[in-house]
Image (cartoon, rainbow, N blue to C red; front, side):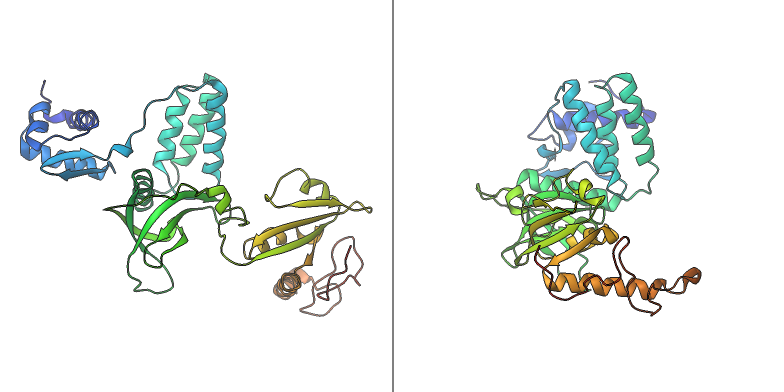
Length: 354
């Protein structure tokens, strides 16, 4: 094997990574030194350099190894398949506010199999992603969780929760799931400490590390079934039926999408639309309802209807007097009537059955 000059350290480290990738049982430091033409002392520093690059290098029985789950086999895509991946990763890039060098690298590799006009679009997306502030801690956490999930190894995490001195948790990752709500990434895992499934926001994980313990995901576990009751990511809580009435023109927009697997739509004679969904709690669906403004009315459950009224009153109080604007009835704290509807519209009384 040829040796590398001092100035070729980058090429030497890449060679080391290739050697380790091609030797699943690992190599000793002496073997690495011989095959890269440097001293064992220099090899030690090069291994540390690989670790600094977030390559999962570890030592076992005197041999240096790379976690076999770090690399995936090369795959060739048809144009349609590559475009499907492009749309998916592009969507992820829009709904995360964390710097993600792995996503940027994946985009760059994807560009190599796409036609030039589309590849230019990919490279532009990569350039935009690279402008975000670097967050190496987040990247390491995501990689550790991905390795734990792929290798079925228990992960130890330090989670930023309500208790400032909360001890680390041992978790068995079952899935990594992005959420549009909050532009966040979550790990769905079994918490060994409580013996139950939990959902952890990755951005709140201060540190994560792999352990030697392994686990098995039950064969009947399906992430889509598990999250089928959730409006977003959280599936805990008693199932509750939410009934909403959408008024034109929002009614037409609602029919264009499937917002939840359980949704049932019923057009009404006046052009409005009734939607019913069964979800686990109303925490996540509440901001979505508020996003429709005056074009939606909560029919059930009564406590959610009341909550929307309370939020409306709070908004009216906060915005009263700004720019000379006052609530429509002239009383601070009372919500203005919905646009296009009479001021005598029903409030938080029991909803009328349609």
